[in-house]
Image 1: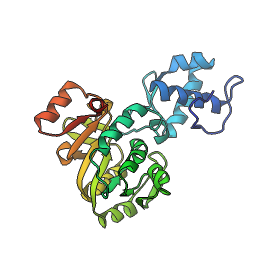
Image 2: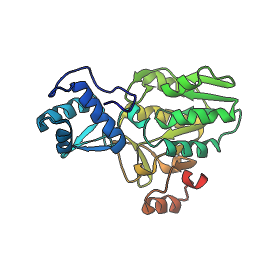
Image 3: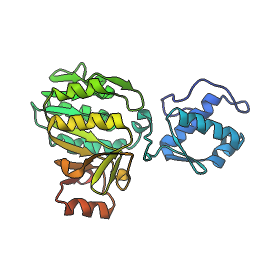
Length: 273
């Protein structure tokens, strides 16, 4: 029943002749594709009671893999929720590739580049190789793994406390390391932009992103167009703090208009394709 190639669920059994593990894995597979599921539809699909599906969703929510909403569940971000890194890594690959191409146009060989956490950064790591030699400084485990053996890339891996949900390192060690570094550019991604502000739901992640911005001569914001018009618990930065804003498709017209009225540089990567 698993089509995603990634195992999300604990090894438990349940249901009528169906392993609970497999049912919950199947729920996550559906969510990767559709982003939202309906409780009654799941109960019918797996021939189990709605209470059984409620328990499945409760356990998956407790594991940080989804958030329950009225009548079902979603992996869409909320003010205090972001989906697991493994889910985000499988979504919007084409858009991430376009944004990566737009970002790399801002990079020159010999630069020192700060790369933050996020599923976008894994795409970015491969594209950055085109501009080697580079110094790449990151707390992103996927980027560290991608670049650790690459010639002509000087990799500085930031330590800290590992967070599996965000697949990165955070905390005092990360922030203190960044306070002693200076880079040419910081590449920052966020799950929410509302008005002229960028937001994130996790305070430790906010602190690491802020430390990267403070350590860089300029910062570039990378954000999926579907994340506009949303907020999260913590304000990360005013959009004016970024020298460029890169997205994969046109945000809502009112957001485009507000950004351009403010005199900010907005690049829609679709236009670069």
